[in-house]
Structure formats: structure tokens, C-alpha cells
Image: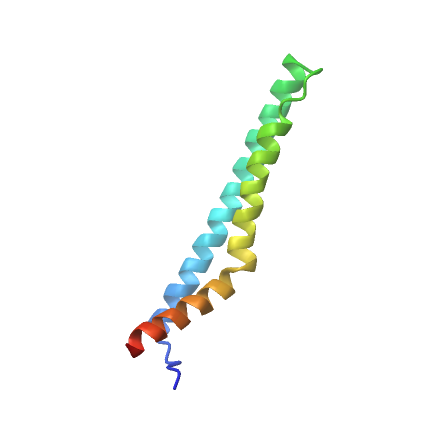
Length: 92
């Protein structure tokens, strides 16, 4: 039988972790926007014929998209998977 007893402390801990993850993503996004804006300006002022800013933009953008999916899409899936593994270990 599955143990579904979750204490208020567990709920609070999970809520704090999710909130921190969301704040961390927002910080990551804002830093991405600011730094890439600076890189675009530098690129356009120094060498407008060679648009090198696209390389860090897309490279970092891939990391940002992965971070987004980890925080907003797969978080519930990973939490359920973790609970399942904990329950399996507790039965041993």
C-alpha cells in the first residue's frame, strides 16, 4: 500500500524549493537578456558586418530553454518519480 502521508513541513519545504527554482530561473532569464543586449550593442558597434553575437545568444539560449523545462514542465514529473523511488527504498 502506498504511503501518502505528507506533513505540513514537507509541503512547506517543497513549496520553498519550487519558489526558489522559479526565482532562480527568472534571474537566469534577466541576466541572459541584459548580457545578450550588451553583446548585441558591442557587436553592432565594432563589427556590424560579422554578427558573432548569435553564437553566445543561441548557445546560452539552449541552456535557458533547458532550465525553463526543468523548472516549469518536468518539475512535477521529477517530484513524483522521486516519491516513487523513496517509497521503493522504504519497502526494502
